[in-house]
Image (cartoon, rainbow, N blue to C red; front, side, top):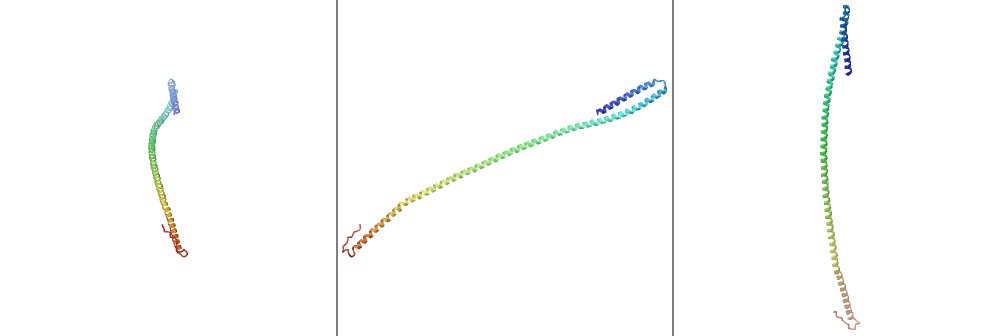
Amino acid sequence: MEERAKTFQRQLEKLHTSTATTDRAVDAAAALPDPDVLRAELQAALLRIAEQDTQLKKLKFELEMEQGHVNILRHDNQMLRQMTVDMTALAEQEEEYISNKLLKRISGLKKEKGELLLQVEQEEEYLTNTLQKKLSQLQKEKIDMENALEQEQEYIVNRLQKQLEQLRLQQPTVITGGLGLSRSNSMSSVRDGEIGGVASGAGPGSGGSGNVVSPT
């Protein structure tokens, strides 16, 4: 773009130089006394003027083309600036949307984390209470079993003691009963012997006499 402007400037300067040369030639031809030479110079000047007019038109056309190109470039530049502004605004909106979305997500995760922690604490508390209840129940059952075992042992000990006491009470009676039976047998034997002696004294060879012992 800058190079094209410099070229157009050079062509414009060349046209100005050619115009000045033509003007000087016309002035010089006007001072000539010979009409033929004057006519020839005028024709040459007219040709140069026509050529300059053609160059001028060409330069005007190129100038219009350049102006149109400049206008297009300005429009494109404005469009690019507007697109840059729009893209910047869109990027800001997108960043804000992403930031808000991330903040919401973070808030949701924090809330979910808090709920999970609360749920875990409640679950731990429930398990602790359940285990404590089971432990208390087991301790109670253990105490009950120990008490029942003590009662059973006490019952068995008392029963054995009663049985031993009964055996101790029954043992003298058995001994006494045995002694009475022995004494009774002895008395029976004595009595049987006495009766036999009496009977033998009354028999033949006793001389008709015998000592009779009266039982006391």
